[in-house]
Image (cartoon, rainbow, N blue to C red; front, top):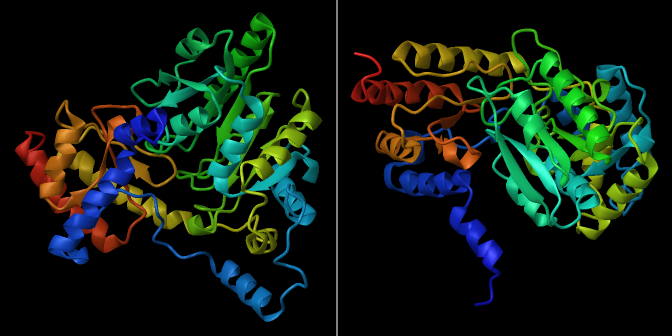
Amino acid sequence: MSMSVNVRQQMVEGSWIRRMFEEGAALKALHGVEKICDLSLGNPIVEPPAEFEVALRRLAEKPIPGMHRYMANAGYEETRAAVARELERETGVSLTARDVVMTCGASGAMNVVLKALLDPGDEVIVLAPYFVEFLGYVDNHGGKARVVRCDRDFLPDLAMLADAIGPQTKAVILNSPNNPTGVVYPESIIRGIGEVLARKEDELGHQIYLISDEPYRRILFDGLMPVPVFRHYRNSVVVSSHSKDLALPGERIGYAALNPESDEHDDLMAGFIHCNRVLGFVNAPAMMQHLVKNLQNVTVSVAEYERKRDLLYGELSAMGYDVVRPQGAFYMFPKAPLEDDVEFVRELLTLLILVVPGRGFGAPGFFRISYCVNDRTLEASLEGFRKAAVAYGLTS
């Protein structure tokens, strides 16, 4: 048998998002695309902002000599400086280009950071519900993921986090606004996590890094503002991308930014740059680097996502679904009316609705809805959700 046992096992356990994508493709072939309410993928339906289109057209009409060549593995100096300036504006922490490496999306950044940090057997704490791929990223680099459940409101439990940290703990991954719940961790929680980690560093005698995964940082509702981890913990790294704030998921452009006050800053940045190369990324896409350097303060219409949130949350709540109100991103994570979330998701398939079971995110008993879809799809799904609610006694 040629395939590794580890990879084969990962494929069996698999990504539930990918499984639902495949089931959705079969349903669409059978019933027609227009009849399927596909709420399974976080693939924004919105187009990039007009400023991106203008910048792209300008670059196409007046190309920069050498713009498609290799550059330093960290990325263009001017792009890294632009990212640093925007992060400084948001966080109040002074950053420069030397604190940033451009990467192939946030997933590329996460793999770069974990590759640089982990020795075989090191533990990385992952808070559930979590983004599906975090466990795979940790495994990629010889680490062991230790899952810690959040509370019933999907907020980190500081006592449980502290109990989970041990001699092998090398990092903790945060994701706020959260995929799959849409929950935003308040400043009190971020501050508390920083205090727990600082205390544990002193107790254990080694650094513990806080890796904050922030691709949804600008998609915040209800007047909320981002909570910068850099203000609350010294040994912290931000990984992010422009997949969501500029609606460019297919362009794979992101970055890793290291807190300038972190221990061993220069060595770690050199490690990030080295790992960007040896992991095979080499460098972030050149054309996208040229474009996003002037778009750091631009984002898609957050009001549009907030309107969709309000519609879906209001309707599902009225039907009797138990759902925590999202404050950001474009996901909702209701409790399934059955103990077996997979069974309920398969029931929704019969109503031509595609969602993802919560067990794929480390939270059995729930299901994820992605509402970054057009209004027609979102509104058409409501009839099916209503039928399921009646069938399972949520509403009359």
